[in-house]
Length: 231
Image (cartoon, rainbow, N blue to C red):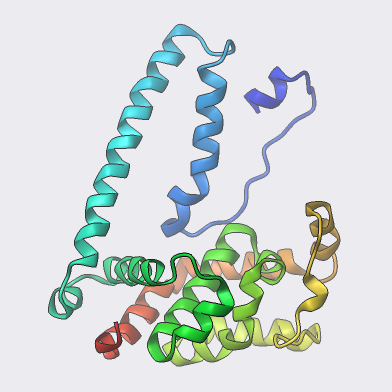
């Protein structure tokens, strides 16, 4: 709002989007740096600039700590991974998969990953995209290539509530998860058109409500523990 008003806009308001707690840092990162840019420019007061410098150092410290934690996850033995709580194991598996998929596109990853790795990759990709920009974004982005596997993945890890929600949505709207080519866009302006094709906002609201009661970490971590040797 500060930035918009500084550019001369009068009638501005913030529109929030639902998001799960585990993605909070990721989703706020852009806003964080946007605010930093605003405050260190001519718009910020001396106190605001000093506070911003403190915030930057604090943020960089937390990034270093997370990096150390990530390195620790990568070096853990199977036994050590099994001792992690659900959220820690979820993050550890995510980091391991990211390390393996580095420099590969989605099609290459799907061809390489099998079994529990593919299930984990597909499910985590789905939750990441829907939390970041909703189901429409999941269909529009290259993540749509994982769509043919998502229902099976949700069913496999026992996330029945999420399975039923997505199954009902695609059935009611006659969406074929094996053919999402109609969602391919060439320009970001086309996203608004895609968003209006189906009741995506309603789906997203239901999804975020489900997350408040049924965290995917519990389902996926339980599944990973049963197939830990594949990781």
